[in-house]
Amino acid sequence: DAKTTQPNSMESNEEEPVHLPCNHSTISGTDYIHWYRQLPSQGPEYVIHGLTSNVNNRMASLAIAEDRKSSTLILHRATLRDAAVYYCILILCGNQFYFGTGTSLTVIP
Amino acid sequence: SQTIHQWPATLVQPVGSPLSLECTVEGTSNPNLYWYRQAAGRGLQLLFYSVGIGQISSEVPQNLSASRPQDRQFILSSKKLLLSDSGFYLCAWSVGTSSGNTIYFGEGSWLTVV
Image 1 (cartoon, chains in turn brown, yellow):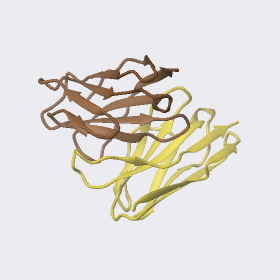
Image 2 (cartoon, chains in turn purple, blue):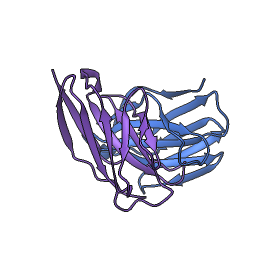
Image 3 (tube, rainbow over the protein chains, first blue to last red):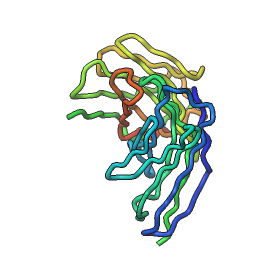
Image 4 (spheres, one colour):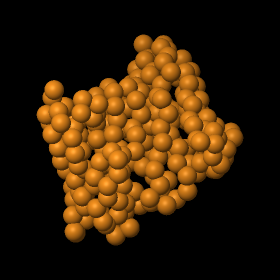
């Protein structure tokens, strides 16, 4: 399974933007980049995904580097409800999902 | 719409006792099904996944097993639990093999082995 590297933890002030980085230097041309987040005592939930172009949805934005070896999840205005563990994963075959340890985001009021 | 149910939500089991966690998906056909485990303060570990009835792939050798007796039913079992089996168990589903697919998780089951 393709590997991703994320910081263990990050902090953000409430109502400020948050940029969560992910490195995936061994990504192949057909790997999709997916982001999920896990709130305490819940299963992960889908946030966003992309292949080459930047993506926006109601939850977040995904910025993908031109060489695709890194990506950044952008939360435009962090709220206390955004405190969670964020996982960046690569999907080659759509029936294999491998999660790492993710980035634990703390939002400071 | 699709839903996933997982039970029991919590259980406390003695070492050496058996385990059965059940998961069902509604509103879809031929889903891919998964069992994950998350130990306290750790990441998600993929235990088993299934692409069809009777087809089980094991990711980590251990004393757990999985079965898929029906299209939308996935069961995680153990004959004898170990202390190290404690954790948060999550069932999940996806459809197809497109890399753009997403995965959806159940509510999870908290297992404490004492």
